[in-house]
Image 1 (cartoon, helix red, strand yellow):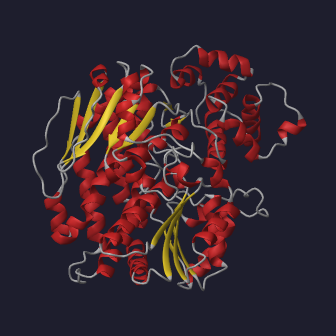
Image 2 (cartoon, rainbow, N blue to C red):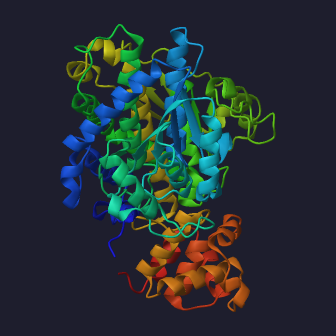
Image 3 (cartoon, rainbow, N blue to C red):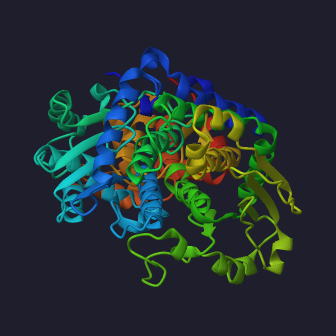
Length: 583
């Protein structure tokens, strides 16, 4: 059976776990270039392909008409994890722009599995509930007569989104669904979804594609190749999601507002070429990014804490990056954290200040300066994101204890950056002249924040990924300490076990159960536990996958596998020292 592209290992990065920081940056650059060049036998299905560009253009025109009628219409962007966070980011930006023009009716709405807590903490369990997804969509749009629904699932796999698509298909007089994902539709997930009548995402796709053929629904699925770290769709998947959403909705918004005639609007090809230019510009700073990775890796290796500090949407990008580290690398929730100038007021999320409701931490810079910074250790590292117009002020005298990195993004009307005393400085010189050649200057200025967010995303992804590689959380290009906190990650762990051992899928599942129940002998009741129950236990059990890997590799007991792990500082070293056979 052909493996989904988003779950395959990228041959470019097979040895990324033993690479230097400089080599890591070059490998990430090579992977990110596949966003624009395409990949493998699907090379003609890249972001510049006619079918992708034409579909974006059609959806763009639909969006324009809905934005002009916000009382009766809505645009709903929905996803899980990174996809849901990027949906929030775009909805926030679009509604803010509408508000600036005097509109009192926010046209854009976002849905993220797990609610607003999932904007900056891992809430994967909600991703597995299709009925919940459908119910939330229905409630969010109950007073609207026309809805453009955009469901985002990089692997065409999320049950939460499947439930919403299924609901839209049954109510096409109201909903026009758009699905964004990066696998061919034939490789959408075929695993049955629990408590949903035995249906899978693949079954939903079989119903969805005929509706697409009729022009009543849309599918945008460029194939951009496997991730640098296998399955880590926060990286290329997140980047392409951002490119597609903004290529649809920024032009739609500008046209609906007036003042931007059709001759001024750039082609979608040129818009995407602008992002490609930003990508090249970011990686031209590879030496500076490598230095930041080295410092961040040293921080995590020394059990220090990595703190991101930023303003407005650039700061939100750092919140998104920090939120992804726990499920991806099995890191401690305190390892990588982000703080935002203005806190929840700046975030402007639907549910308000979660710290007041005891449902989330205080994410404000004020809290960072007054509380967090008092506990700094020499091993800690602070990453500050600034631009020409705003300068984050860190007031705590405790900052002198730790190292700092400054990331500077030059704004559209560039001024010279104000250098501060830092251990590392990344000056991201945005390619505004090149972008203005591709996009009308007035339009490019409107787009400048989105391009800066994209640049920040690439750098932050590189820093956090590189740091965890140096800490030993990656073996070859596999996230060997991921948390099995939902159905997708559970099956990914099964795949990793079968790839690195001689176990069948059934045997791999049994090894995971042995770790979850800390027992070499399993009862029939334990063997029959549904996956949802297994993921609930796995979420609070450390190092499930590396322990199961060592059991499978060495054919040893649970206690022996744990003893092997305890004798190694890095998970990667424990696995590497014990691998006997790699397929």
